[in-house]
Image 1 (cartoon, rainbow, N blue to C red):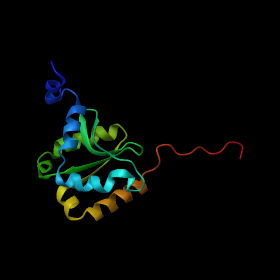
Image 2: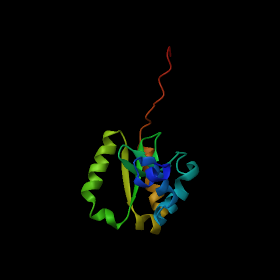
Image 3: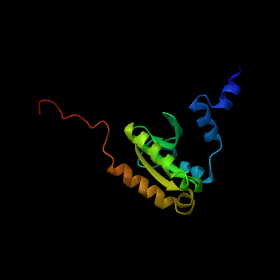
Image 4: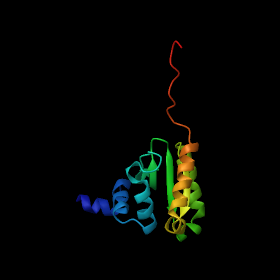
Length: 133
């Protein structure tokens, strides 16, 4: 069996994630432009990241933050989204969601909300107190 056949069957989430990175929605493109290159609070984000059985739109691993950009189909998939969020939270991630139209129509406000969440997120590796002082 060739690698292509396995990739198209998505036996590995990384193959599906790679395909999704190559074909983003308009909202994902706009938000990625804002998040890439540590533009938001100096935080590094990756896009279409597999975590367990799920592929997350944007992930900042350093602070364990997942950003999901949802289209209209998520309105009727709310129960699945809840299970997904619970799984990610059980892995230590905070999940925030935005609707596609919010990103497209008011990306600045979305970025401000992401900055607020980052500012409110405690560091996963707080510096230790200096010994002997």
